[in-house]
Length: 106
Image 1 (cartoon, helix red, strand yellow):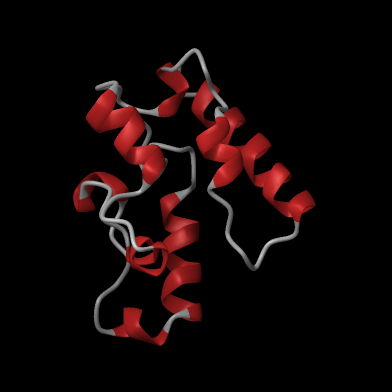
Image 2 (cartoon, rainbow, N blue to C red):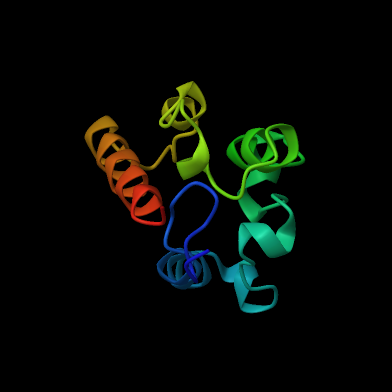
């Protein structure tokens, strides 16, 4: 697995930097990569979830290393798991970028 690419194709280093910068609570508890956190990420509490739905489907349910191994990439979970601060256009672009990153791992 390429370092710093999450299960869903996010660049963990860039995401961690953004999370730590935009969320004061991370000064004390920095964002952890999804593998280390086993899908129990900081933002899941805001959606009243225990685990990231993408991580749960990919790793827990299908037992894949990352979504790039799934024939259904990108699936409905990608389209339905949207940062509310993003426009629909930004969300679609992030999906394209993540899919491309995951396909480069194969």
